[in-house]
Image 1: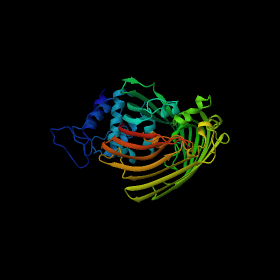
Image 2: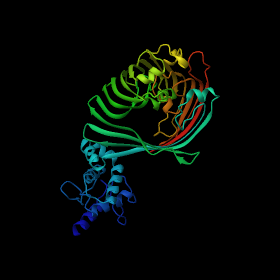
Image 3: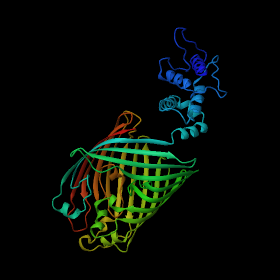
Image 4: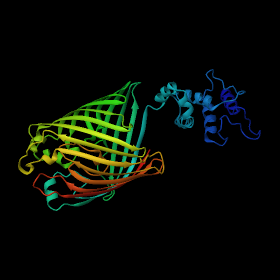
Length: 452
């Protein structure tokens, strides 16, 4: 007890380098931190609990001044403590945030200590989304496309909240783990749509310029800016390179995740999942001129047989290009073709219009969630042939879907730090076999993201 009192008294008597406070006020052990700052009391409590250990020799050197850097060294050592109370652990975490810059300057040593203190890191968002659209229902899977749409269509609204959790954890110096957990609530019915769903779950290894991913991993196709896919595959992926990268992916993909066209094989008793292999080569997306090429191979006999395609395989080739016209304006374009689409049968006779997909988009500025007042606007024309893509990033963002073609515009604005709102509007038609009337499609989306 005597040692605790001496340690606490000595620590509180430390002064800022070259500065002394009025004798009537407690002395401040921090540089540029007022005596009424919460950290002052936090250090006193940790010292009394023998958590803060002062300098490496166990003393506080009460007759010497202390700097923020020296304080960071003390906090770094405190971060290695395993048997501390919940209150002390919370105080250490708050001090680590306060001295983040100084801790960072200590380099690898502190990075290693942080992994011991908090091996699992959590982030995520709460999102409110409203969509009003003609002829589709965002809230549930519809497996009767032809009947619903040719009977005059429908007008459906989506009004939902979503909680998304993104845990990540350190395994060792090379490997980390990642997951995504989603939970939805329908505002119209005041009911939960389903139980929490883990839709991402993968391990990631980093070795120099090579990244390895194993598991159910998110696959955003960089070469075409997400026009081919922005949806998980279950398998493996390897990315190598620096200024020019190559990504090789292989695994299984569930077609029912995407457009209604991909759920159709289930109606015929087919398999909803298929084998996937692909390769992309692309340059740094920050360059003034972007480019990318890709090849995607799918094997899903039941699905392609149902569409009357030649054989059970699909071979899809893609290209992408981008031009940063000014520091604030960028033009991107992408094109994909399924070379195995031939003449179909039955209702899908002559399905050549299904085999191509392309997107042309002009974007001005960028809304960054950490920069209040930042914004972005875009205008695009897209055709998303349902046999040339899987689950596009445009679908993920709440806009047009696989099987649509038409114009899309949108804007995003950061209202405050980590609070971002978006709105987008699509107007066009569905892609149908030759000889069938194209059906009007439209969708208006508004959403607000609260990131944490």
